[in-house]
Length: 353
Image 1 (tube, rainbow, N blue to C red):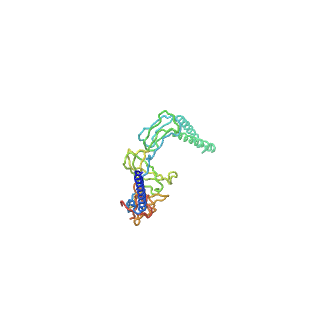
Image 2 (cartoon, rainbow, N blue to C red; image 1 turned 30 degrees about the vertical axis):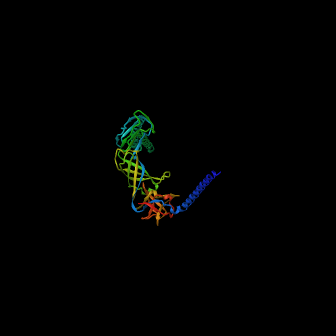
Image 3 (cartoon, helix red, strand yellow; image 1 turned 90 degrees about the vertical axis):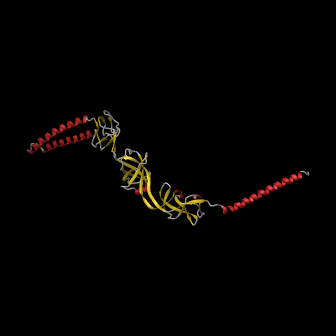
């Protein structure tokens, strides 16, 4: 028993020391927790000083090249082809006969009507002489004259049908790939070939409706092709007189002023539209904008504290955005840590640009 007393005393002493240490550390943590709000270090932020600068108002949209004139060549009536003059990839003049269909029956009918016309004209001539001497009634003479005019009308109908068996070049242009050969039976739905104007193109593109007021006849635009960065020039000649309901875009058409083998109808193009310049635009970094509930806000430094201000924006560039209202030159806009700042938060800066 005498040996066990020192052991129990030692155990009790250890327990007392452990309990005292726990109470000491808990007390220290509470003291630190109370002191932390006062001693907490404010997060540093980046800032940007607003100043007027040059803004080149330019937008980039997608478009496509279109032949200035392009037609799918098709015949008006069904029939068998007896002549083909479609030189693929070659230039033809306006009025060149390109395709001829069989018209033997129409030609025979035309000759028949022409013979009838010649005969009736002779009869009409004789009757006109008899009419002068009252050798024939006026009614008989008018009946013969009516017959002459009727035959002439029938001849014009046949000639019109003969013209429908012919396909002529509607304008000067290049013939594309032909799809028929001599002897083929074709219908009005048969695509014979295409013809396009040479070295003359149009550029069609769409712009958002908010820029529609800037798109006017005569406005110069530039465009590039997908395979290089070379810029080509074009001039707007017309726009649709209304915004598309589905896309909310305005369609514009420009005439291409440049000539190049790389410009092919149907190719896509990136169009740059210069809408004007503003020498005193207020531009701020895009990351400073706080979008919320259909509004846009920024955080501005006021007397060393954060102040949330609503703004309206204009042109957006790759890294900056134009401010139309809400800011003035000299304002300091916060560009980092904006999600953690509230009104009247004290500010400390890591950098100011």
